[in-house]
Length: 539
Image 1: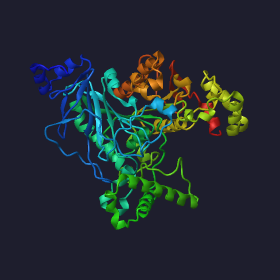
Image 2 (image 1 turned 180 degrees about the horizontal axis):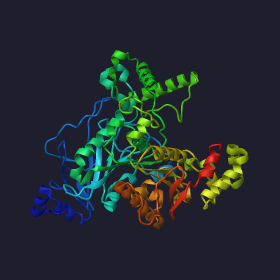
Image 3 (image 1 turned 120 degrees about the vertical axis):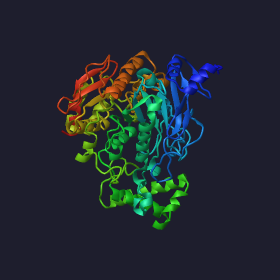
């Protein structure tokens, strides 16, 4: 480490803006006792500077007892070192992986601890008068898994450097720790049903109170997330207690939430858990002391038992079955997403929404090497005498279709869900909604990954260098990332994603179906896949 002159130490200690500007011209790592210090509500934190970007990791934004609402962290004395990522929420341990598909993801599982309410910040300048747009990233993994460090694409440094935005990523409680409804057992547990969402609201409150010290504008905050993170964005748009904490929203491959779990059902799951652990209602406090491993296992059994009971009663169980997630608790989430009161909450929030061309279909290797006869046979099983019309519609929507598998591995789940969310937003809100579809095909591993789930993340974060296993790291990837990340930056800055190098991108409406196609050549198309979606939906 270079020896820091007394003059530079004095400047750092005083936290003058001139220091931030001067060190932005440097490279490599700078870290020391008097560098990168920021005062927060709870105390001072010390980060480090990498290639001119101030970086802070593992800052506590809240604290919480198990199943309780989050509270402000206990203040600390002195300067808290915040240079490494904090713990992630406990989840099912990863004991095996599919090598072929682990390769492009390159997960970082982190280390687990229930005391996981921390966030990370990247910024160009601290303690300054300039206020930059703030982008708060909500990780994927549904509501049960994942973390802010799970994928290399989540690193916020490159996006911060490119767009002079402040990037924040958040860890919060998941699975049974974040969404076990114990509200039937007294006021003490009234917040348990959506504790994981309350964590995210607490993180946004932290941003509101503290981000100015990190060079951010607390009145210009965009929440963005992919997959489960997109679902969390949708939830926050429907949460009255989150109103005013963010100004724009981006949902990526995460428009799958159309309603929240009925509270009667969530209470039934809570009761089944107590039965599974042989606890009486007046012994509910015992759940505080049970190990996570035992609690998690009992929770899975409780979910399975309730699901079987529903089936026996002839009641439908949607999707992949019962699981942990947002609950219509009447407090954090008092309305379903389609309720008028819910859409009114986010009526003035601009929305950017979309998905990828293939999503999860590349994970089904059975269709990878099929010939054209096999492709037609598969489609005939699904669409009968409309199979030929479907293939024609695919070729119309995607003129570059070449392989037989290109006709069969299209995502027909996330794309329609994105359209439904865009339609609802466009018809109930006053702020614009912008639609995109990511179709760029990864060349890695003989092209088997295509435009799979999560492949858009390295592009929006401008992190091709960190994600070559997924993108290949070629010229086309860098070129597309430059355009796409700028669109995300522009949307976070102004609410409009139009950017240099892209065609004019008008606001979406159900009538125009305006969709930005992100590919080697980016195009704006109106309802590009309308015909094939109509056939897929049986119309």
